[in-house]
Image (tube, rainbow, N blue to C red; front, side, top):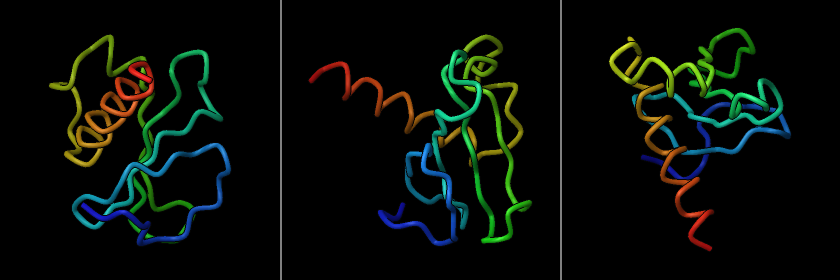
Length: 88
């Protein structure tokens, strides 16, 4: 897990969660904000080289429905971040 992004990402609404399997992981509150935002795994600096999953859908259908380990890791990190935020 890295503390700095590997790839360029210019969305000001995104929170960098870390890198996993050469993908940068983000929680984006700019889109689907009413549903808890979305999780992004960015595989390169090319703007189309990423996958995005709606946070609420993961909450609704569970981690078993996620085929990408990077998104599962992003979900785990985002949940931990939310727990830390609510504890403060």
